[in-house]
Image (cartoon, rainbow, N blue to C red; front, side, top):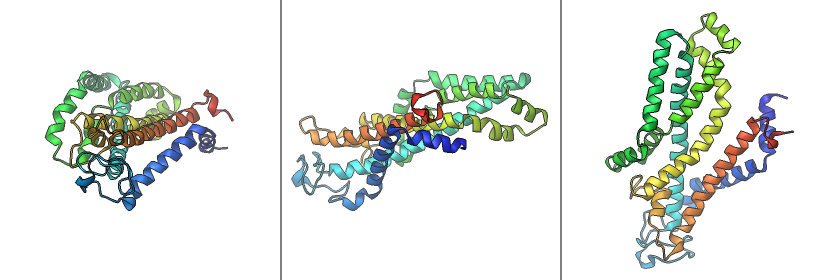
Length: 286
């Protein structure tokens, strides 16, 4: 039995994986095909029914601005999903480049040590920078731009811890016999990293990226909720929640439930992946 088949069996034997995949698949299908079921679009106003509860025309009710909560929730779900997936992917890419490069060149003489030190200082600089404050400062200037600006903005302040872990893992891998042999044979360092380093850290990156999706979604939602992220007329789950009315629970409970289901499902899949890749975990035993 190959390693891939073994991991697949371990993953699929975990009930959390099935629950997470099922809920996530339903939410993705809702985000894609939701517009087919709109009675009102996310930007259409029905002022006659403003601040009314769920009905046949407005399944989640109407907020105080006359906007359909069901349509806006699904529109926000779609954008939040794209931001979460894009941010997690870009974060992992940045961390991979910086972390593996720093760990690989660190043992290559004085010049390599200087390069490693420079990259470590860059990581530490970003770690001590008040990221939330900077996000709040940058957000107003970008609010009229496309909502896609949230992806590099969030990723720019989320890659550092992952990079530090990858640097430490790479420092261990460069001491292995096969990496030393490749270096002795004069193999290009980039080829060595691609062939020998990245495959050995790939499982950890996959887990970290999966869990990073939910972290990015929560980050964007929080910024949008307090007014420093995506703003009207653009829609995300954070902006839908921003229009809550404390005396009308239907204005915030449906989007909050969708957000909770999305984050929990992603975390369940991430934990199942971790169990499948960790041979010492109880759920990974055959």
